[in-house]
Image (cartoon, rainbow, N blue to C red; front, side):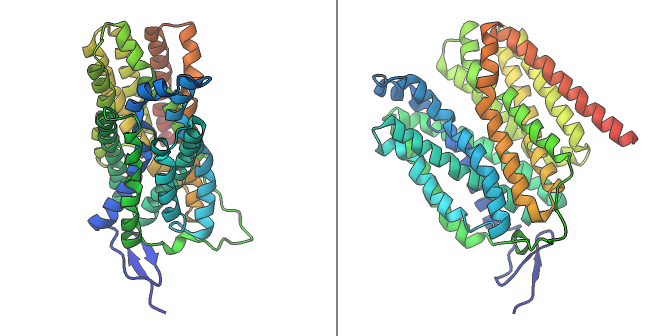
Length: 403
């Protein structure tokens, strides 16, 4: 039996060639798989108007078409927790290849199928596959990297996902001008990623754990604070892509291009702050970074509420994006640090579940408020809640440091 080889932050790989987790091939593969998450929903955004026309004769057709955009999020949330438990027991990579193939099958359903209900079934399959791939790739980041390297890669991962979102939504817009079905073909990107996963990713020895029968392995209870916090952050933030187009119309912005730029700018600024996460984490605690992130989002939402101009809304987009871009890698790294290796996949699966559950329930929770409040009043209300959350996290850091 060949000796164990220690690679990339203390992870051992057994019965296989030594693996350099710092190689660009390994990092690029992890980033490409990560990018499949962001494209799962937004790629077909530009197709929705023409898709609505096609299925307008169907009962509830327009509503079902809109549902197709966010439908994967529900199934990501459901499947991620199960995927986490499975990969802890059977290994990280066994499911990945199958998930990438089925991702292409479910994602491309809108190109091949004429039945909206079957397209929705395809979107559900897409969500299940994303729940699997996102859980696996984030767990592998935790397996492959430690300390400073983990911080850097977690920030890079979220930044690349944000940039990928801009690229895929732009490509989807151009292809939708040909036909609303054509953007669905972009989901075959997962097949292009598949060979690299077999060539460059290796199974960590620790990923299949022989848990002691006399001990119950648990994470510290604070991990649930991170889970609920990431869900709450997405509930708040997801009001931007849902309602900013309508808000901009009310203040006189009629050009769809300007509306698209405003929403895309949030993603761009989140990428900028995610790139900087590792340097910021060197100076601040996890609680402080959440406090900073919520403060930036509060200022951003306040700017949106105050502003009756496009410039003020753009300022709000900037600050909101910077705040979100800090909090996502902060949550990922905190969970990676808290979770014991034996149940790391399970805990990262839970994090993914709470992440996408927040996106799914955001319109359900917040849109009823628009029956009572104006758009401006709703953003004032959310800015106040975000400020309270910021104060709570700064207070928690102060209390724990004094203790």
